[in-house]
Image 1 (cartoon, helix red, strand yellow):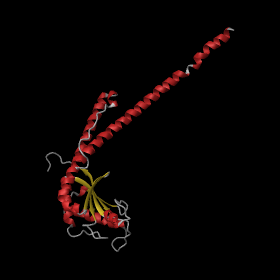
Image 2 (cartoon, rainbow, N blue to C red):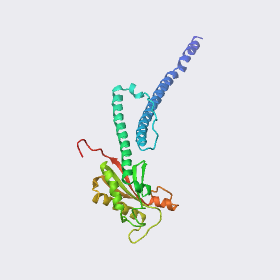
Image 3 (spheres, one colour):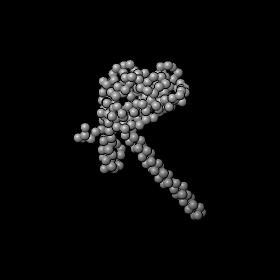
Image 4 (tube, rainbow, N blue to C red):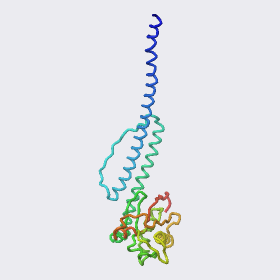
Length: 260
């Protein structure tokens, strides 16, 4: 009978050994999700700061009303490595300052362009907008080109030069983009809308360099044809809006102290 009692006394210890491995697994799993949460929280803080910087810029442009507040939230990464957290915070602050300054530059740029081409804006010959790619000044076909032609209309060069003067002051890098509607074109001069849109973009770029003294190292050109519409090509008004040359502000390089 003694061997039987000995087996019964050992069985409970064998059955409970899995609890040790299970508890270790749960601890590791908990730590894993804590790290995931901390990373996600950090991303939200960065996005929040970026949103605030953009919001300040758009307030200057009159797009948003002032008075939107922000709430401070502790950074969970600070307790992990204080010195690294302080360095990261300093870097983020510098980046945020740059974003705010960039937004304010866009607001100032918009105001100066409104003064330079206010009449053209009223007549919808020039349209300004903010896109994910940057600040865009659109030169609509109306007032700049004849239908199906790439030569600038009389008076169009003077309008572009006024715009170029403002952009040059801000040390802007530009991408000149030619666009068209989806109506097929096949003439002795242009076999497709791609060729027409590229030729119009080149005409504007050449004017910026030759007449406005724009730095050619800050310019690039591309023709999109009918493949980057901003309106529905099913209507005449939409097609008019799509026939345009866009001046896309790629970047703004602030002048160094002591430079003109």
